Amino acid sequence: MADVKPMTGRERVLAALKREPVDRTPICNPTSVATVELMDLVDAPFPAANREPELMARLAATGYTELGFDSIMPVFSIIQESSALGCKIQWEQKDNWPTVRMREPIWETAEDIKIPSDFLTHPDTKCVLDAIRILKKEYGDEVAIVGKTMGPWSLAYHGMGVEPFLLLSLDDPDATKAVLDALKKATIDFGVAQLEAGADAVTLPDHATGDLVSGEYYERYLKDMHTEFVDQIPIPIILHICGRTVDRMGFIAETGMAAFHYDSKNEPPESMDIVRDKISLIGNINNPQTLYSKGPEAVRAEVYKNLDAGVNLVGPECAIPLQTSIANLKEIPKAVRDWHAEHTN
Amino acid sequence: MAELSDVVNETIQYEIEEFIERPDELERNITLFAKVRPSMQDIAAALIEGDNDSVDVLTKQALDEGIEAVEIMDDGLIAGMGIVGIKFRENFIFVPEVLACARAMKAGMAYIEPILSASGVEKAGTVIMGTVKGDLHDIGKNLCIMMLRGSGFEVHDLGVDTSEDEFIDAIEEHGAPVIGMSALLTTTMPNMGKIIEALIDADLRDDVQIMVGGAPVTQEFADDMGADGYGKDALACVSLAKDLIAAAAR
Image (cartoon, rainbow over all chains, first blue to last red; front, side, top):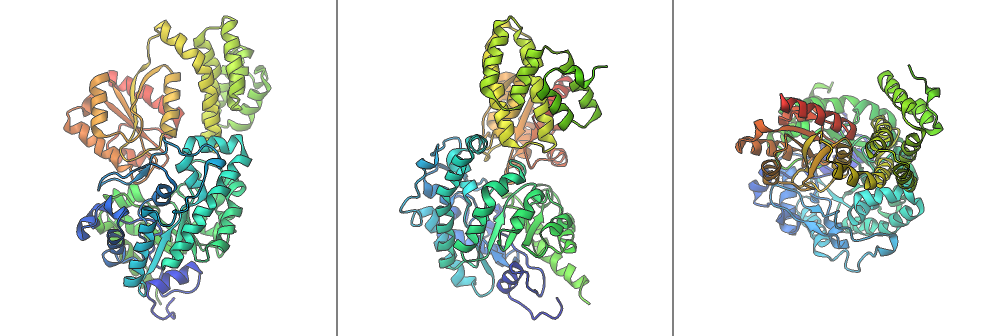
């Protein structure tokens, strides 16, 4: 890495997503790093920061301006497009995340699913697009702007309820595939719109996690669709799936996506052995036990563990708890720089 | 000692042989299924296969034949769920399969529960369960509740998105010695600690034993939050609730 010329954060992230040489490992957040402390710092609190583009952009920018990450990710929650699709949203207060009311499903079958004509102009999707435009204008040369478009598996949880959808997946595979097919237009349209608004990459959360379903499920229901997204959304895609995923990382690595954002339930060396050279890994600093509950030393140890394993981009495993301390988050870039200083000839 | 060949139902034989590896669990299940009636083995086998229609028919048939509701619940439904729990813990099956088995158990319990309620059988204890504030996920919690009720507990389900005040009100109303909190999101897990702090502030912490669970929750996190116990899955939840009820009684 010593002979690579100094890079901007944006160049660093985009190179690492292509597994090209970098001047140092980028610090990347494919999911939210918003905290209550940061909301107070820039006067951009939840829930308004999920609904007003100026506030969304202002809060998201703190990931770069305050924490020193190489990326900015303005989509803090997983509800923007579900709101536009008609799901009921619980917007919550400053110290809680907005959530989809999955106990009040809006679809029972694929036939019920209609992508509304105003899907991309609905206030909650438009907010994301406008926030990306603001961020691109202000920080686009320095730092990677990462958007987010939810995958059809996650959207199905939101619109049908987790339990009914998982039972459908067992009872009727054809009907399940029809649901996923009906929803993929939402994923593609929102992803492409974010590319056009100025995003450098998009995170694609699709929660077929090992805590819920098998690796075989991923291959059966999602692998081909995720492969299709690589062509349909022509921008680096970062797949995000929480929980245990080593049993499906081999399939994920074959989709052609740029990166996989992985959880701390998976060991960095084992994960790298599975995906090496086929897809970049981003992660996997533990949220609840480390970033939220422990101090900078524990954060540093996890950063080093990822760097020692050769993980391509370092960051929290998922959206961080809103009460996470800024000191712990700032330790991530500090530890990355220290590790590189120790490993430079 | 009973042998696997003493278990007459071929599905149960296969399930034990194929999926149970721990010697103590192997012995316990062989001993259990070797002594229960073939019709109870049939109910357990149908439940393990997630066949709710068959469980419905077989449960009703067993009751019509005069078999006690408690026996059907213990030797058929709960015995079957025991194997389901082991397969889930060992990642042989995942949540969709467990949900199908739970649906089958519900089909059987629809006949059993009214009979047990009317009979006034003494409860194993009272437990309050809820998913924490900000979290609307309840599959894991509901599986725990189903297993707790099936094991003789009286359970008050506070649902999802449960605030500190709702837990406090429920403890005061029901006088339950055990509460269970669930969270699926790493972003909402810290709310478990907030609820425990609220119980301390309300001077109720010493009155209740607290168990926590959920996919991202670990024993270490439970300890950090100040909980009394952590259950990895629904089976562990039942065992933990029994231990905590006993601890509360001491």
